[in-house]
Image (tube, rainbow, N blue to C red; front, side, top):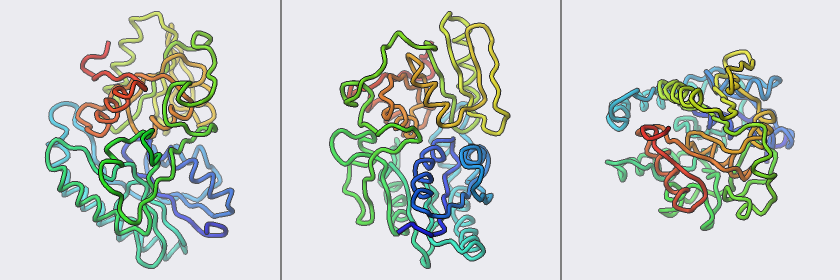
Length: 336
């Protein structure tokens, strides 16, 4: 199916998670002798350029949505709906030109709604068949399904059974006819597992106290909440004696390490470096983004999740996994 095909990979630009979970898909496509081109912008593009420096890249603008530094996330997103729909319209026009100019055979879109075309095969990747929201959930689901059904296939990166990672997001309702579970996917080189504990993962994890770092914090997500999270974490770590590693997720910067007392800070890590660092850490602190959840589940790592304030998907996932006794979560306001 993929051999000798020219395939366009297009991750959403909200944080780095959509780009990181495209990494194993790109690797598989390259193994299948496909020609891969990546369409993205900003930090997602910079991350994928560092992972795949020999591939072709196209700048494809995202929706340009920022999260509020305070106030209601719901109101912010409601006011952003016209901008999002205009972004979908613009990318749908842009993709037709890209298909023609680059002779694309297949499009794989990670949560970008407008990248389908009737003339070629298109795939939509999402773990959110339903979108959690305090109001308008039914309407959001109808809109979501409208766009999903524009694609030939929808791939859900989760397990079909009870031991799943996405909960209601992919399991509350029946799936559209074009939708398939493909299992959890991760940029890391360990077979994915549907939980975080060593018993649930079915593999042996090295002793908890034999680690280089006490804490590793992965800073991620859209601005300005990414920077707010970074400031909070650094303030808390400076008051402790814990040996800590902080990954800033700034892929546009030169990769360099800085040490301030007990805290080691690095702008970003490539996939193999990130895996080694996680395995050499006792506890991971991170946002409860779904790609991070899959990565940590793959490695069977303990985690403390701090959801992005007001992001209902992350708040739901963190609480869902804590109720299953898989991990622990705490709100940003109560973190100390």
